[in-house]
Image (tube, rainbow, N blue to C red; front, side, top):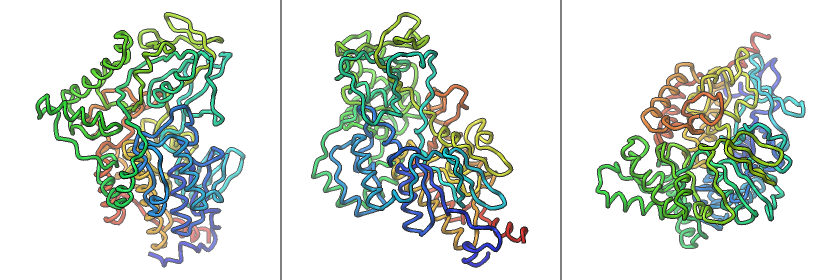
Length: 556
């Protein structure tokens, strides 16, 4: 190895404009900027398409938008002072409160000065000779950096409208994923909302309170369970804050990054009475406790899954007055938990309102959007407003939209033509010095996101520090390591019930998208152990090299 100063000096190849470029100013981008700039002294530039920080919580400002992981856990852990100083008002924070939190973080750590707002990345090309990334932006500018770090998020590219005639509609059309920041007044209006996933469920509950009439177009009913939101109990806040280091450690040693008690082994190994007791307890507690905290075989054994699925169906039937409407809202043809579980507050009771109508488009598909509304195979409906809560091109969509090109002119889109190929969900063979924060084939959306982000950013920072002190300048996974990781992630998925269901976890919501599991299902705790082992074995599976030094020698 060369001496440590080789990192800063190359004889003929000019230095890049920045050490690192970070894409996105949400949870990931803000922490990456703080970690790399303030703790490591690197020159960092962040590009953000919006005109403010927040990422997901900047764009998703639709009525009812709220986190479904407890506020005390859905927050940064890197600063003890920040954890103590910030006061959450609710058990599950609303979008405005989370956005205030992220703006506070940006101000507290003086992050805005290194964020270029309203700047969308349109290309990122690896320069082999210069050993750097050339990053182009929508305004025509180009800058270079040794490292390229995507903090663009997993759910940041809304699914494109798939309905004929949408441009002909004379009223207003809104996407939940790109909601007007000035808000929308639904008073006295006939409103349609298409989609009943997590965003749709949250928006439906709130819009029904305001609209003259709300018509919900549902294709697939969901197993929604109670959120259980309430004002935060001051005693609980004091308890958590007094023990935050242990709380965070306990969180990181669970499958989902939330410190719930371990689930019981099997729903089939207990009496019906005990099973019911467990379901009741987790249901009443609310949030992810019901998904993560009942029994360990729910997602791997169909018979076990049937028990929890029927429990949810029973709850739905009890809460919806009209048996015909209840039947339409009750899922029957896919296992519980194989779509992203939504959490609700009075969602099912909303359909007892006189101003709410449910249209089942599985039975009567939407034919087109017309100038005045929506046409199905059975009827025409007139509306003033149409809301599209139709989801996202998840996980891979944000990355493929950036025009990333690696070694030998290979595009990421071509590399991933049959689905994502990564090592640890963090890096890609043929794309040196590219890091994907909570990328596909990492636990990502099944891990408490702020902690998942911190884990990945810390991994990246440690890798960069290792290169720096070794006089090296590139890190890239080997082809064998990548192939092995993809096989490992797919094998785990095949041992679960998830592949049986068409969901965005499987990429099945986007026409033409490869149908593969996009999430690592081994659990965050297992994944963290694997990553730690990789580092302990001198970055096993990665090639670390001094390419810039070789390039300088060749030019000389």
